[in-house]
Amino acid sequence: MKKRKKILISGVILGLFVGTITLYNAHNPIENAKAISNDETLNLSNNSSKVFTNSDADKRELLNMMINSIDYFKNASGSFRYYSKNADTDMDVDFIVDIENSKSYEKNTFRNLKTKSITDPFEESVFNGEYYSVYRSDDYLASQGVSDESARNGEYSQLSYDKIFIPDSLKKKSKNIDSIEDRIITTDGKETYVRKTETSLMGITKTVLLPEDFAIGFMGTDFNKWNIVSNDKYLGRNCVVVESKLNEYYKEKHNAISSKFIIDSSTGILLESHLIDDEGNDTFFTQINTLNINQILKTNVFDKHSSMIKEG
Image 1 (cartoon, one colour):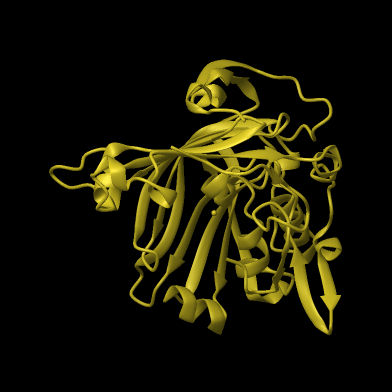
Image 2 (cartoon, rainbow, N blue to C red):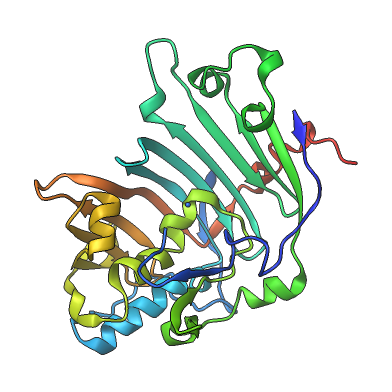
C-alpha cells in the first residue's frame, strides 16, 4: 500500500482537470430509481426533441454543448467499451460520476490482458471528495509480471492513494458555461484551447462524459471540415451523428483517415466514437452500453476504499 503527499488541485497544477492544448493537438452501481429534479443544472438530461441540421449555427451549438457537457447533468452512471489499437488497450469501463458533489468511481477491466490463468485484470479508482485511490486486482498485477507481494510498490502497488484538496473557487469555476470562442486563446501568436475545469476526477470516463478533446480536435471551428449527417436514436435517447475527415496530424497519430461520432442531443455526451482506417476498420472506438443520467446514486461506492486508507 502506498500513500502519497497531499495534493492541491488548482487550475495550473493538473492538466487532467484544467489546462491548455494546442488546437488540433488534443489527446482519459447505480440503483434504478426516479430521476432527481434538476433546477440549478441546465435541465436538458430529459430527451431533447431538437433536430440538428448541418448549419453552422447548429454545429456551433453542438460544439458548445460537448465542451460544457457536465453542466447538463448532475450525475451519470453506466458502462462503455474503450479500444485503442495504438495504445494496445481494450477495456470495459464501469463508471459512477457525481458532478454535483465532485466524486467519482471507475472500474477498468482489461480485455486485452485476459488469459487462461488471468481472468479478472482490473483497476478500480475512486475519488470520495477527499482521497483519490486506485486499487489493482491480483490478476492485473500478475499481468504486469508482479506476482510477488514484496515487489508491489509504486505504480504496481495493490492500493495507492493521494489526498486531494480542491478549492471552492475551482469548484465554482467548473460551473462556468463558456462558448467555444471563449475557450480559444492566443498566446505568442499560437491558438490554444483551455479545457473545462472538472473536479470529479473521473479518469478515462471523461472521454465520453466530457468529450471536449473530440469536439476541438476532430471537429473544430472550421465547420467545412465536418458534417452533421443525421439525427437518430441511441439507447432510447435522441442523438446526432457526425462524420469528419482527419487532418494530417490525426491521420498519422491514429493511423486513420476518417471519424464518426454519435452525440447525445441533450447533454453532449459522446455515446459512440470511431476512428476509421482506409480499410474501414476501427483504430480507436468508444461505445456506451448503458447510461443513466440524474438518478439516485448508490453513494457507498465512493467509500469503497476508505477502510484501507490510513490518514496522517
